[in-house]
Amino acid sequence: MAVTARDLMTTDVETVSPDDDISEVLTRLARAEFNGFPVVEDGDLIGIVTQSDLVDLFQPSDRTLWIPIGFPPFLESLEYAIDLSWDELDTGIDLVRNAGKPVRTVMTEDVVTVEPDDDLDHILDLLADDERDINRLPVVERAERGSANGSNGDLVGIIARQDVLRTVRDERRASE
Image (cartoon, rainbow, N blue to C red):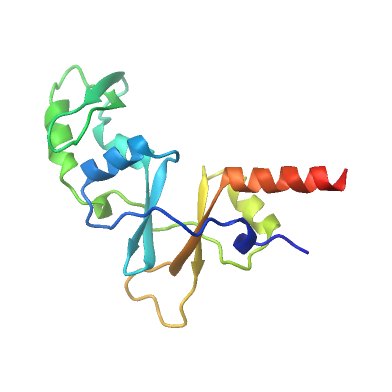
């Protein structure tokens, strides 16, 4: 029996809304064991936001400084790599200015997805793509209706790289 996305996916998916504040999502990412969230509106996947999307907001130059973020609107102290421009010391202003923006302003709308019946080979091809660094694949069911709202389909699960590696490992062990 061939392994499909349905066999690999986790159905309990943590998501964010396109209107969630960037500061809220940063706080959730600091506690999460993964580096991004699918962005869902009315059950439809409309984008994805990753840690690098959010941290890139605060990196105007090529020098990195690790600083704690713990002032309002952040609920607790976090630590991120901030690329500090020594010529313009307005990073604090950038933090405050960007913290209240909605996630929709930084999310990726062109999401790489799979469908529940896609096979393991297709999933491996996507995760091993040299041009994109994909760590998690949202699993969507395409609606029969048109996607006028920019939907990628109804989110039904997610597959992490670790899920795929575990399955390949288990299949190899079973065949020994």
